[in-house]
Length: 442
Image (cartoon, rainbow, N blue to C red; front, side, top):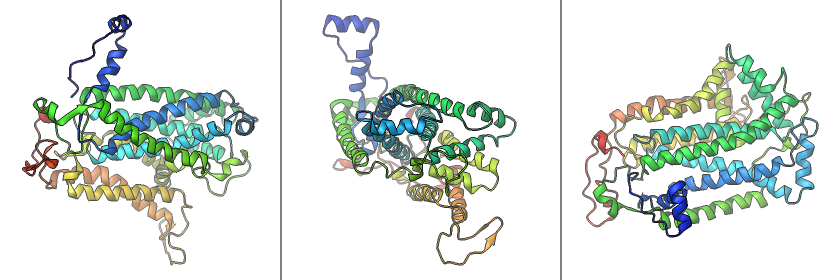
């Protein structure tokens, strides 16, 4: 699909002039005409939704930066001034704050889709790896942005996370001093966080361009997970425009409706009330928690009794995603034809949700109130701490044990020879799942 010839023909003198010097119009036209598998479902619309979210976050962030004051004495007041005195400031701020949550909702669904349909397999490893880089940058950007309102949760969240960096042997302390700008979180820290928070979205935008470039080169995956041979391009593909621009457009409208519900009716539902209290270094909140989209990784951090071990586990939970293409040993891409792995995948999704829930609870709180518990090692069984440890164990087992072993031992269902067979009359003539030759991987 990536080797299709350009069909763009410049019609005006201006178009011909541009095309001979900077063929950006040709690039856009060719992208719109890109042969796209005709069986893509609505799980493939989140790429466009994520692009929209990035544009919204950059646009609203630039406007907020015009009024925000990165000073510990004035940061909280400047945010309140934006909300009360700047024309449309409350709308811009709520759009930006809730936009981060919408961004993560879309990226989690986008990554789960890629995981389910095997979109990380050869020759699409670089698409997946660049996507993981974008995900990591999103987490870093969101954390930096969470500190900027300089409320109680902002300050103490920064205190907890930066202290974790200091736990890294040898290099941890110098990195901590550089990040904070001194021995403690103060004005220099806020200035650094503001600068990095402003910069990283543009770095993300650059990575998105690389992501699309890699996608354009390797071609789209599809729910069946098989290569579309050149002799079937006309039958099994359609131009991206108008077929998928219309389909994506409909999905974007539904997503914007959900977005608008939170912005206009539930603007603070996804935030924490303590962040409307000015930061006070002398008063620790009863329970320090990050934003909801970081809770699974925060839970993994707390699951390990050793501080440095918790840091390794937290970063390892993201790092394992980078090597996923080499952990999955199955010759079949789509879990649609892998019933055993599909079951483990559903459990993995539930485990991820469970980690998010545990991350929002006090570690030593009882999971079942009133149920007797007994002390084991450093905690009481029937607490969120031990539930978190069980869920964390499955998270890593899924990638490091289940994917390699199940891929070698499972017996997949037969897969179709083409993407059209499952929906055409007489299309039940299926081919057995066999190892694909390198030239037929797609």
